[in-house]
Amino acid sequence: MNISVENIDKVNAVMTAVVEPADYTEKYEKAIKDAKKKMNMPGFRPGMVPVGLIKKQFGVSILAEEVNKILQDGLFGYIRENKINMLGEPLPTEDNNKVELKEGESFTFKFDLAIAPEFEVSLTKKDKIDYYNVDVTDQMVENQVEMYRQRGGKYEQVDSYEDNDIIKGVITELDVETPVTAENVVMLPKYFKNDDQKKLFDGVKKNDIVTFNPSVAYDNNEAELTSLLKVEKADALNHKGEFNFQITEITRFVPGPFNQELFDTVFPGGEVKTEADFRAKVKELIADQFKKDSDYKFLLDVRKYVTEKIGKLEFPEEKLKKILLANTGDQAKVDAQFDKSIEELTWHLIKEKLVEQNEVKVEDEDVKNMAKEVTRMQFAQYGMLNIPDEYLENSVKEMLKKRETVDNLIDRCIEVKLGVAIKEKVTLKESTVSAEDFNKMFEQ
Image 1 (cartoon, rainbow, N blue to C red):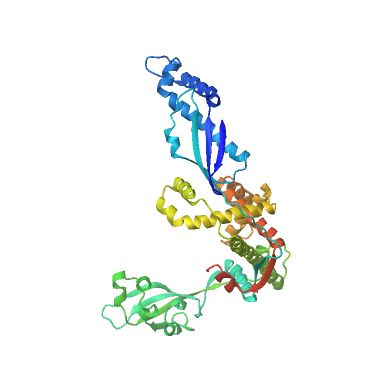
Image 2: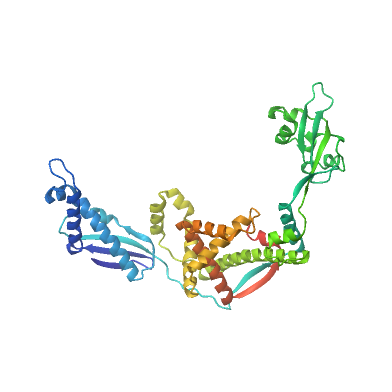
């Protein structure tokens, strides 16, 4: 097969492929013979249908299938061997619709190619890029310690109310002929909308009776009043007056003890022996997580910096729109998202060059370790910090069975390694910021 490429401009080209009889005859004849063996046709025994009849009825479709296979192999082989940096796939031109497939003849096919723009990218110590270190405060450490204690905590019955306690009792409407009353009503005064109503419960004890106004306390919230008074939703806002609340139970959540058992639960191995050591380890955990976030923000800033440094690239936009339309089938979606698609494509091409320049390579072990890290983070969200190795390995095996998941893990590995490589090449403009200010950077 004779293949040639004609460049229309820097980002557009036409590929011409001429398929000769010598390219397809042998494969076509074999396909006809295979069809003969399987063919069942009225009036003929299985496998005895004449070749001429098969060609007459099915020859064009069989020839088309074989020619298409040859085209696919030839086109992509040529693109690969000649290192044509193409975007998407070759797009058949309208000329191909005029091609008539006849045995023994040559066929000429043409395809539009979208060529990736040529550009140079380099990063050196002259390039200065921000890198943010997040300040891990003592309060952040204490909040995390409290979270660990909360997981080992329990509810206890107490005699007097404090903020955050849950109270239970009997509620009775006052000064009406047919009062609303309900038993086993549960309230958390801390969540009242009105501060004066909250204060009515300060220091109250079991069996005390408190007079308050639920409508004021909950700022006429229909859903809250319906649940509290145990009435129909349509009736909830009809009860604007005061109620008595006789307290039958006061329940308080008591955090777990701050002891060696907690230390060993969070950090197995017995290395942590004191509260000071525990807080120090917790601070390390928080700092490590923020470092991952800082590295992610750094790569976002690298993307912005390099993209602006290179400037706007020239793309074969019309061809790219055709490719996107072929993939999505939705012209409105293509038009709405095209600018964003160009942004993503630009960064993809830049990242490919940076990966090549920095010789970033991802091994199977890297992907497996990334899968473990992702799994640990997922379980940590539910308070499960120490996953048994066997369970972790099984979860990783399941993750690696899915092609899409593996591709995502590879991308994450590439970005992590690329970030490390770029940090060594450029000059970091390091600064320390609060967690609040750091998080605001992602809202911009």
